[in-house]
Image (tube, rainbow, N blue to C red; front, side, top):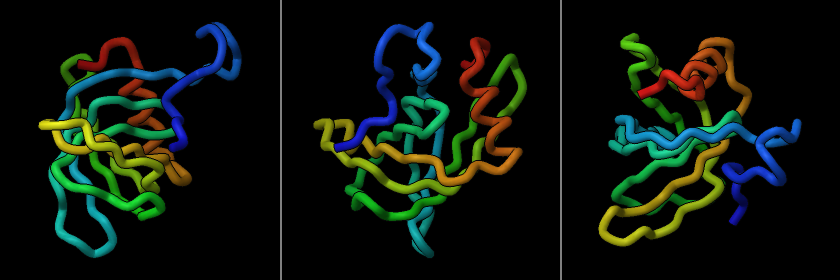
Length: 120
């Protein structure tokens, strides 16, 4: 399974990916299906990791939404993604790894804010 959350080398390397762990409410829409609740547990500049109670197939396209507070201000990330991994993590359900597809300006601003040090 491909991982877009790891970086090679030290954090000071120019190719290192910024990663932030969190627990924010999220949701996923697969195709024209119903919205599925999830929990965002990790974000990077290239994707987001979620916990969900169902299996999702690799390669599926999904619309993901993450709601968070950054420095007391609400931030909503809504972006088109593709599923790059789905792993059972026991009683918590499944860890779903999603890669962003062409972020628009609003989505990129939300990712930047969520990766900032003030995100809670």
